[in-house]
Image (spheres, rainbow, N blue to C red):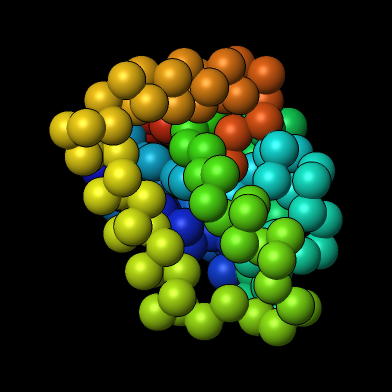
Length: 154
């Protein structure tokens, strides 16, 4: 398998990387791509204040543009296109911050903090609610990330 986990949005020539992935995969091999969803609730609420709208990101995707990007490599077929993740702490922090870029260590700390909250045993009832909200947002096309699974068909 080949994974592009939070990578494709950084690439100046992403099609060449997709073609390379296709060339190294065996028949029925998989390619997994995760990118920020530009139609997410966070983007809709925050606009340019959203921390993942940054100079390092030279490509931005919606479900439709990600599907069209995948179609540029004819050897791949889409197995699944879905959405994942919702982080209300990111939205709250980004609402309060000024326009300065969020440093990588701060983004990592917030992700670790959110993960710790999700795993805390006393928050199990809240986790059930959170998971439901996350699934609902994904079904509505508003989750934070897009995930596409591609399979090499020839």
